[in-house]
Length: 439
Image (cartoon, rainbow, N blue to C red; front, side, top):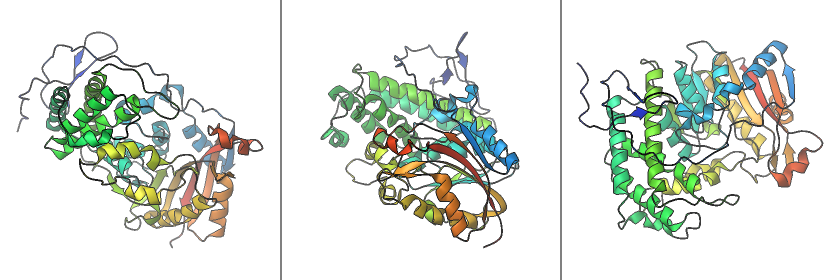
């Protein structure tokens, strides 16, 4: 049965860097009609480049051949530096994301049919790359905001759905131009982060999104709105930008177009037979998947004392809650988050024991575990991962064998505790373990 021709004249258009604009197709459906190119909102300049601090001094441990393989995966090539800001990796910001170039390189070390697990999936970078490589994957995170972003990024959408998102985004954009009373006005109470006209635009957009009937379309548009909270708001180390009265609406529409294109490209690139990743809001110390479900783990546990993810996502979680409800999207994260800044000494390694035991049950014998972890600080005490993880594997009876590791020196950006690394540099580690005997 041939697909229906879109009834709307809302097209999805990509602006190429050179030449004329090209019409974009989603899936195998009909071509979209050419639209007059609208005036685009101003793009604010940005000098951000992911992993600009790489190339630190490198150290290898364990099996030399395996260590060299890890080192190649860890060395991000110049052409890969901007990957986190392109395509499916650009649909929503998230702090300290796993670099997709690492995920690609590690996935290439696995068999084509390997099933991959990421128990600290964050916004879903490893899961997205697993799907793009044709591999089934499972993901978990204790952070409810992260889980919703990961599901949005890795769920394949058909042409009809993406057309609906594009149409609805334009309708939300238009509705938000009109000020009206909204239950989301409560979000303005005690507001110090946004200029009044910016807050008004944000509330109008949130209210219009709340009236979208399709819950899946509504979720995508909501996750097109939440990145604007960081873009237009002030932070302790950043003042809010001075913008026009329509800037927030313009950027919402521009981001929604970008997300639609990214989701279309992702859906076209993933093999048709592959199921979407199964993603659960779950504590990595208590994983509920069956024994032996995965062939490999590729993950990055929270670094000790570096981030407080629930605190970072608190504002987004507040805007994601339904109007009039105090539902906390981060309820589990506030109490269960590992390695958050200010944690007491020994808490990180105490949590990693149950994590590794759980992974030993879920990964099949002979499977491999790839962990990206950086040194950190717990209450003014440095945490050197190679020391602590090595002691953990030696002291506790686990069916895991250390294979190899590569470590690169990294700067420590938290100035009050930088002195703790004067005698021994802080490092980031890519560690390979092997699942050995049965429990």
